[in-house]
Length: 237
Length: 269
Image (cartoon, rainbow over all chains, first blue to last red; front, side, top):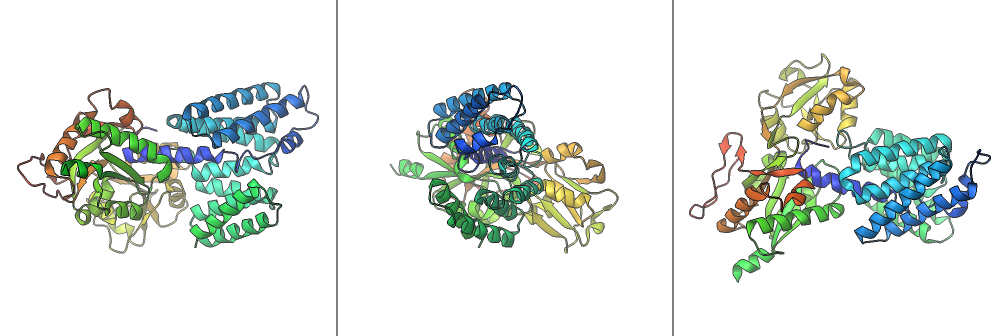
């Protein structure tokens, strides 16, 4: 992190905050309890499935609250709580995608609280996401690949951080290939294409995400996806 | 009273084209810096606000606003826009891990570029590519870069380096941090540093036009110069990776100290 300009100092703080918001529940940890429950690998040995489920749900709840919390002290406490649950989850079953994914979310909350340590934390997030994707790529509707994509396209790039637009685009394509009907995956692909300068591809995918979201039952998540797709379409005109 | 009114409307504009991040999330850090800098200058609390813009056009728009009295910009931005914006440098940033100056490095695919003439038909990609004046006449001042060379601003420097390594007709101009990290790339052996710039300032704080009276500019400059000497401003400096400020020493010109007796002259890069 050393050696870059003061201006970049501002920029990396901003980027870190943006990346941390990637892990806020709107896009990353939106898995309802039923999805979390269903994603715990079946038949895993020596696993208290209910406890893993509870830990994952607690991490999601902390992320939910953090996203709407303006007090930095409360956000710090929530990050600590989420990390504690993630560590406990991993102690129960180190191989569970729910725990690895939860650890990534918890680390994202920590990065938001401590942007100065973002470099290492973002790297840790990517490691956790890699393990989750290797275990269950479909967890949270291809969440590991989707969140990896968002981190890679939003994080500061080499050498300031782990951002890598080419790898981010590849991850977004993987998420869409796995779960093509899930709007956040298509939104992530649109954002990645926009970052590579492919505005036509970005518009096409924002429009597709809009269609997908419009076909779903109404709810807060649907409204978020519609908003993001419409905003993306406006920005990519 | 008029001084107080002027102070209330003072804004410091941070602009860093090519670097990551958005304006909203940067706000707490620039707010913190503005507060500390104003305190160091002895200005009334709340008399200086700050904004950040990550784009060249957005930064220019903000700097054209009447309340924008100070600019904190990378040196390439200063080179490109100092004359247009009538910027007068007040201080030069001292960056943790870098210092007050840095060298830029031109990187090409191994064996492809041996001099300026071999750049014909190439593009130069750089985070500073928004400033052709800086690229041609500051960073690559030792070379007569052919007129047909295209200069591209890129935020994704890793992608640009992959293009170089794959044999595209692209060279990349790296700042000091990027150049130092070059050996960490898995394809580093495909790349070669072919030219290095003289030492150049990293970032400049400047007065915009005549929007800040000379006496106030002088107190602000004095405040900046002492910011790195105490512990009070340490947090504000640290969050921006700053160690402090020194008097500006621009290539080809040494900024003159500001005095209340002499009008501020534009110091050209």
